[in-house]
Length: 340
Picture 1: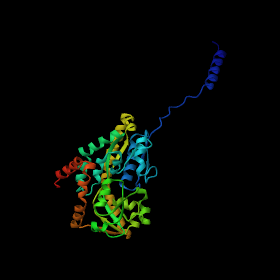
Picture 2: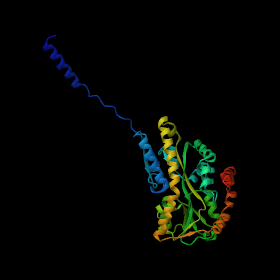
Picture 3: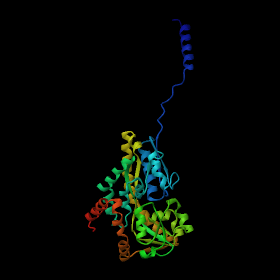
Picture 4: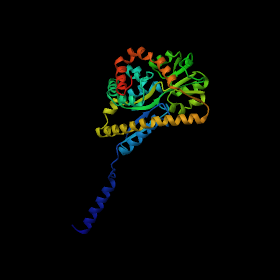
């Protein structure tokens, strides 16, 4: 082949190459999106937990999973979120434990029983042991997987009158979460229970639609309820905790390596939330005290015991609803730590 023929072949090859499409570089697959919806402020224990989980997951999956957190009912309200999860509109929630009652899982309402947890050590034995695991297994028939129990803390009562005795609650309209147990608790002390979405509480307190409410102190502070309530009684009469849950079909459809990474991140986040919850409540109480708008009442041991005696009949009243065996199982864990 002479030099002219060789140049012609090189030129023809270059021309053909120019007509071919350029090679496309490999494109990374779209990330898996987890929409994590919740109804409280971002600076509460639950809000901080959701953000902590997001950070861990996105770092450890190197962009394969993206967690979108929607706080403060920006995506769904209390009554809407569980249905949204079951339909796959969101992938993760952290509802209050009492929210499972309407799904027919009334055993979870045992967490709402007044004075059922003498302290946080008993609570941990329940949520981290066989009782908590057994309750999570019941979720699977509803297309839900339980991932962890997040602590929020023990509840206080507030109103625009001092609440030192349970008789002081008589006739007051008190906001509660949707829970037959909480309805029974309020009626046991003569109050009128008012079921209301968390996002509506501030305005209802401000306008007098309700006279008072019960909640953890961190929730009071972040929702500014202390600005429209003159008195706050640190009663520790009940408990609020959350179950972090996911859509079963979504969870089981994840690649096994990603699911293992998410499980570990959730375990670490659960420990993180349960450590900060008490400190968050202590800090919130100090801030409410510093604001100077609310009288803080701390019950004496005798006063608190009187509250306990007034509310304990609710355990027997609700045994047929939440299950006497569930109540007994929690009592057994308390007995293991010396409580009767």
